[in-house]
Structures are given as C-alpha cells and as structure tokens.
Image 1: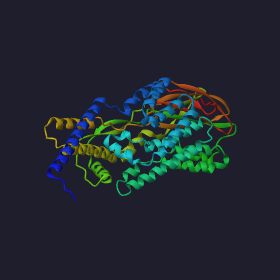
Image 2: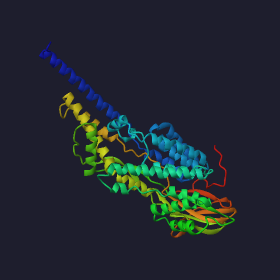
Image 3: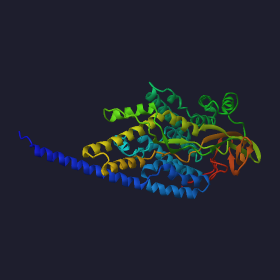
Length: 470
C-alpha cells in the first residue's frame, strides 16, 4: 500500500483549504447580492387587491390579481381563492365554484410533507414550501363552495356542506393525535364550524319527508355554535311547526360581513416551548441540539380588523323584517388556530436561523478564515444579509369576510323587493343595496351579499336568477 508523503498530504490539505476559501467567498458574494435584491411578502402584494376590492372596484381588483398570478407561482392557489371571491361578487357563482373546487383538490394533494421542500425552507424561508392552506381555509373553501352553489342551482350545496363537516373532523383528529400528550388547549382551539349542519338542515326543511333530518341538523348547529341567535327558533320550528305555511316560501339571506383575517410579518422572541420544537426539528434532520437563542425571529401573525358593520338589516317591500345573525366568526377561528400552533411556528424559524449560522461558521472553519480579516467580515455581513432576506410566510386567503351571517324569513309567493343596509347597535347606516326575489310555494330562495365595510361590494346574488357561465 502506497502512503502519501508529508509534502503530498500538505498539498492536498492546502487545496482543500483553497476550495473552502473560494466557497466561503462565493457564499458571501451570493448572499450580499440576495440582500441587495430586497424582499417583500404576500402581505405587501395583497394590499392593492384588497384595497380595490373593498372600494368596490372589482375590475381593478381583478387586474391587480391577474398580474400577481402571472408572476407568483408559489402564491397561485391563495390568489385563486381571492379570484373566486371576486368572481362571486361579480355575479359569476359558477366560475367561483369551479375555481374553489380546483384549489380544494390542490390543497388535498399538498397535505403530505414534501421532504425536499422542507429542507430547502431551512436554507431560505417557508415561502419555498408548497402552500397547502391553513386549517380554517380548508374548511371555508367548502363553505364558500356551498354558498356559491346555492346561488346557481343548489344541486351540490348539501354535498359541499357534508364535506365541510367531514374535513373539519379530519383536521380535529389530526390535531388531537399531534397534541394528545402535550397541550390540550390546542385541541380546544378547534371549534366545529356550524355552517355545514346549518345548510344541511336548511335544505332538509324543504321536504316534509326529511324534517327529522332537519331537526337533528338544527340541534347540531345549537351545540356547535351556542351563541347563534336563531338556533332555538330553528329547533322550535322543526319540532312544533310546519316548515312553511301554505302559499309561502322561505328567504334565506346570507351576508359576508367585515374584512377577514390576513397574515402580517412580525418579530417574536422565542419561548421555551418554541426552542423545544426547534430541537425536535434538528433531531429529525440530524442528531444535534439547538443552540439557545433569544434573538427575535420573523414569523407570520394573524391580523384581524374591527368590523365597520355589526350585521345587515333586511327590509322587505319597504318594511323592516329583521337583521342577520353571526353563524361563523372567521377572524376568531383564524386567531385561535394560529395560537394553537404558535410554538411550532416560532420553532421552525429558530431552527432555520441556527442552521444558517452553522453553515456560515462551518464555511469559515473549513477555509481557516482569520477572525477580523476582510473575508471574515464579509462572511459575517453575508450572514446578516442571509437572515435579512428571509421573510415570514404571509400567504393567506386575503378576501375572506370576518363573519358569515344569516337571516331567515317566510314570505308569500310572488316577487318581493329586498333592501339590505349595514347596521350597528346604534342603527342602520351606509349605502343600501337592493334587489328583487321571486318566492315559490314551499321552496327556498337564497340571497348573498358581500359587505366588507359600509357598502356592499359587487352584486347581490339571488338563487331566483339564472347565472350563466362566462
């Protein structure tokens, strides 16, 4: 066996050191270039779309969204969710339904973890991971599918409502499995969404043969959403009254009220629970421990907005009929679910920061860079740039409402003029919206309005109108 001479071994070591030195230099240059490129988040790019939509300028909102769809491959799914809301407000419920189905299926496909993307996200940020939707978004896709379908025939609304119930049960079982030996408050943060059984009960009331199904669904609504104002009235109607009197039909007014939650980048100091999560991430990637750090890290934080209107007042043929009641509080749901996963969110950010520092320190050691040298300072600057270019993953469904509200009233057969107005405890205000509905005997008619602030955006949709695909 040939043994290399000392001179040969020295030359090999010197070559390795030069290669490491060159690699270290390239890392510094590359990262400084990344820093100069700057960074923005989905939150920043979403603002022009939200502003145009809430101002009622749907063509401008659509134009701004189309530009982002062309440029942002990693954000296409959430942008398509926003596109579905714009389509619905524009009076195209069939198009909205088609888009929502597409994203629903895509999110289902992405629920498995992509190991390659997981590793890549540790070297950049979470924006390189395929976005599979937040848990509340997965449920609300089915909610909006059901509402969109009601506005264009309603043949699949019940199936979508059942999917809503099934999906949230799948999510809750997964959360229970994940946290069964730890924090039970995370499980309690996942409250059942009552819109699914509400729609199922509503549809069941149309037939005298399914009133028992309607009653069971109404009882489930009261259990899942005990603060729902009309729960007891709905149960009483199913127990002791006919679903609809002769010569009458029922009008259901659904209102999407307020500006829904979005995610904004913020800096958070790691907690002990977050460091434990980070340590587990390291354990999965390789057997090592987390170096404790108390430096703030960038994470997405759910932001809610104070609603301008509390509810919607409903006038029928000029006479006050009542006001909508909140059935789903989306803002509260989003905040509670994020709080349940907050240690894990911070833990990933901590693990990523430690991994990046480890790579830079390793490169310096391989190159035998002297402390205080120009290259050492360059690598240090590159490390700062590497962290500075990292952005929190603020991708989210940006045009959701804050609440989904509903109002039911029985009306005589025929055409009626419906006027909706924003309302607060002090009384009605803002700009009213008006449409006509046709009530059929023994049947339901549905109306949907989008009220993010003090005036309705787009059209009031009614199931008594035929919507053609465009």
